Image 1 (tube, rainbow, N blue to C red):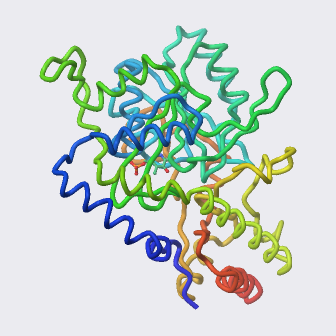
Image 2: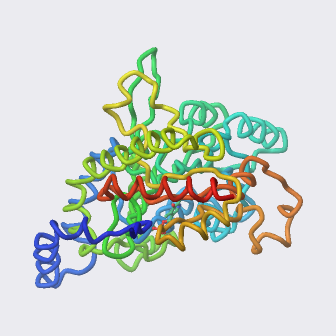
Length: 395
Ligand SMILES: *Cc1c(COP(=O)(O)O)cnc(C)c1O
């Protein structure tokens, strides 16, 4: 049996006529830059995420870059983030001339540890306050502890850029005045950065991204910065870039957005099947640690996107050997991420070399992402679990 890590063909098939029609309309219109289609998607994504504004950009990376530029983060500044995320989270910090400051992640969620963040912010305040932004990452599709992170943001006056690239629609049980409201990724910090890379839960037919925010002034700066800071055309009071989203991507994404809740539910269903199958196979706890679903026990969680499972990541001993075994049995799997950011070669000339983040480093050594996309059949999931069982029982 063949189980690819991701197969977009079954998602495309039923939507194909509608997508071809919409893309053809854009082509025939000859309006290929921004325009009504992009504005329409911005409004839809903002509404979906529970933010007032959306600003369409060219990728998730450019969403982060434009957000940092719009906060005037630059040379001499520091940005607090985690060492266990996709490279873009820190790459954009370095590109604006600032330096990342890492805090380790929590062992269960692998998201930013607010306790460590508090210690670093406190030390930074005493040293003069160079930290200009915080970028928590909603890793694999589950929100970081935004309750405590937003409390730190208020206490230290440091704005939060949510890296929500893997987490569109993911919800966090946010408590205010004694009542819990499920708030969506990108609606809690100053802004949220989304990616429409094809492998994200909402993926385009190429690159694309979006920044959401409820701050009108910030939205205006973002819009200016995605178009070279031109205001009006050919007059530049600030230096932005070309971070524009194409209308061709916008029309495809608007069609797909209609199905996103179903796809999230499908992934969650697959995750539930995996959990049962792993348990029935006697693999849970040891050797297989299943991904955490930390908000699942909160009242009403079943009705909410407490996790959108952009990735279903298990933690296992002999990870590399298991990965090879699965690949030999035609099961796709991937390591997100094999090397922490503080260990990347591009940072090794600096002070990062000697730093240690044990939780992140442990995750890099034993994490393995399994196929989780919504159209997988139960038989395929069972085959994955059975193959993993065979690997450990043979060893
Ligand atoms: C995908 C991703 C990005 C970058 O998005 P692109 O659209 O590929 O530029 C940034 N951060 C995280 C956590 C991601 O997963």
